[in-house]
Length: 232
Image 1 (cartoon, rainbow, N blue to C red):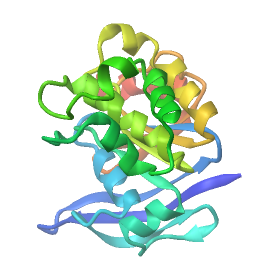
Image 2: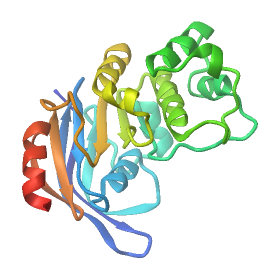
Image 3: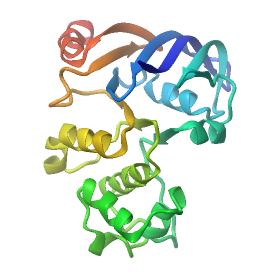
């Protein structure tokens, strides 16, 4: 069953430059689907457009989510329907504690829920719940905290924009297992955006973007093999 369908999507930036050109792909429910491509291929733009953010203007196409047409819905309406986005570069928020940031996404979450969500991303609740979400945290720690907040939201679709960049090497090696744990815990479908090979995800379905267009589709393993042929 498809949870997301993107049909003939074309998008311009505020200056009128065409960024995405006739993009079409679909994502199966309860799957991990990978959007692959080199830097500048339009991957982050696609993530923003799927979330409904207004930095870009749709020229044509339609977006269907969970059997409904969300093409013209606002970001808040899409969030209410069950779409969440983890940005490539999480923000610093001076004066806000990690526990309060986590609760902002789910006011009904218990202390046990907060602790479990941090443990799932490899962070100690004792060390991080009372810390401020400021520049004393590394980029990798902030990424994990943002992912922890998404776990608490339990969205139907979790869009992860290069969540592996900035992670330490030990955690990166466990990345595929980590994604599967999140999928199992939340019941979410995961749309993973990346530009490199992710060990352990070879059999997942993938879509390859290049210069704003869909260049290829297939399993992630096959696309990684052809990736080298296309760009090297």
